[in-house]
Length: 188
Ligand code: HQG
Image 1 (cartoon, helix red, strand yellow):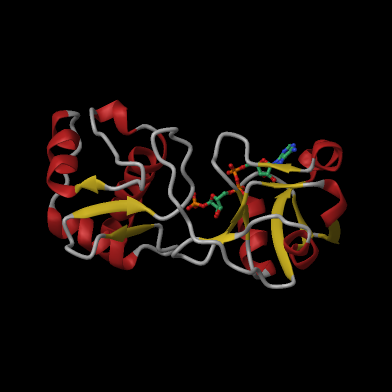
Image 2 (cartoon, protein in one colour):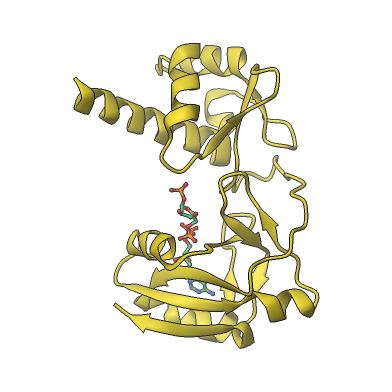
């Protein structure tokens, strides 16, 4: 039962990530510019597209999600993804925050040539995602292939005018990382 429940939660979490970060219109849902969706409307739109959700399920996923990917509004009536968006409808006004001296980015070795030519780019997402610790960076990179960890001189970047933000789940965000701030720290 525990295992089936975990599997079902993972599927629902993936569905919510897809809808709340990337394609809300695929179920006829509208997000506001801060990424919020009305939960009642979300449940109705999802049902119309064959995905059964309910309040308890959604609240449970927000609470138990391994990476704290989602948040509820103070009145508990709305939900949003805290980072990772690609939909142009959303433009969360993250506060600026001074980063730690060093941040990490896990990627796959096959991207290195391009990264060392162009720097780290956000691609389809709104930001480059960085981690404060190497363990997280390793997990992020492993999703793409043979992992390599890049060290980012966040202090120097920040001193030189690049803005940093931190999502509610701890992920660090910045628009781009030019090559001169990137070094390789390990071959795994
Ligand atoms: C790479 C997950 C070629 C970049 C994670 C990465 C994260 C370049 C890939 C969040 C490049 C993009 C984001 C360049 C960057 N040339 N490749 N110039 N610049 N890349 O998935 O950072 O589980 O969009 O290194 O935990 O891997 O979804 O970004 O390998 O927080 O909640 O292009 O997604 O969170 O891949 O992961 P992604 P990411 P969730």
